[in-house]
Image 1 (cartoon, rainbow over the protein chains, first blue to last red):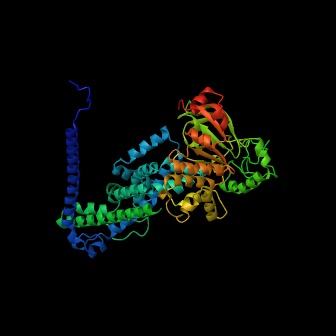
Image 2: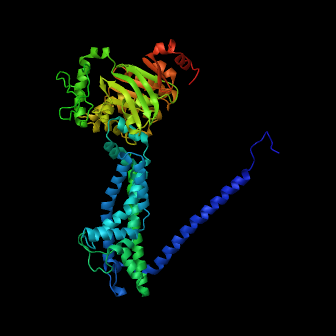
Length: 291
Length: 308
């Protein structure tokens, strides 16, 4: 049966067909996801775009829909995210550097890595409970901006650490060896060569983490961010509200107009998110240009 | 106790545990113990003056001596009880088939194996009579004096200038940096090719130029010893010839240890040759003798190309 002179079965047609089927499947899945997203954004814009004006951005919330705005929520979100970035980025990147460059690899390191990866998957409400127990009650920080920021930082730290570690791992060993062979310490090597080379990857992780933080609602509800705030927070110890809370509050009201206001707030939230990511991508682009 | 021009005794401001103070006022020395880099860097100029002052001392004993060195990965010995000297201002080649432990041995000399977990070394590597693996020796200071060029060119992804200036910078170099960069590039025979684009990325250079940049980077540290781990294996014959010419010139100022796969290369450039197989040193001697009149049968078989 088998031709001893030709032991390779000529099934090229079948192999090409399989490849084509697989490519079609991937295309369908990809475009289905994109279509769903576009439909969602279209729906929100159709509902909310008519409420977007200066008055909407500069008014405090109100029980009259025609007077209601998102001033305190928008400012609260900007403050919150800035504080989270200030806390979570240095801590997360430092932890990643320590675990990759200083902590000896081995079983304990693997265990730590596994635990951090697991923490990244813990539901956000759990972080809210931790924040309530530790920051609001334990440290007696109250229902303040700083409590919210610390809780959010806990939530996104695992994401930043995991992403930063992955980025640091991609820096070739030969670069480190070159630095060590010149009489550099581990810290000098990490600062001068590992961090700059890993920077684009770290930044990507930070973008993902902050994007998650900006949209999280559950932990903020848990630690008691207020739903009606008619003033701007003046310091980190002030009470605050944030866009997701305002959206949550508006969609839970019966009136159609408040649902549309919520859609408007969602558009603003998306815009803030896009702005944040765009600036991060710009920074990354600039960093990659540098010789 | 310390007759040579260099030692690694503790600085006066360092803790001095279990090591007799050996500071000889007439012979200030470079220092490889746990002190800050600044102090180590400052000592360098004194050490150089000492070197030129007493050349006869170096004739008598090798700069580096391997004594019964065994290196283990976990419990597998990669190098077994190897002893041979590395004389000053000569090129010593280590040859042998793949996996014979020659690169491991080379990396042990400037303690690069410290970064590999579970590597253990027994025996002694004496550098001017000081054991490089003694407890109070700072590996960072060792690497600052014993430079290394790797198998694949590994320039930093920065400008040509920064590639060279970084090492001296972090080690507290106080002279003129542009001059040092120029001098190092000239020593590495790269200056004429890059003098007009010092601030271009080092990655824009060809492979052979990159390797010469790596050599220049190492020379900028003014090391005592230059370790080279198959520096030409990733290069074409013309670049290889460039680097061999370069090594010949560097010999008058530097002690060079080169690991190479190419027996022709070892025969061409080295003064002494060590032949290793499966972790054992089979033969060590004058390069001419090892290649023309080998004492061991295995050496003869290897150098005549019967295996390996």
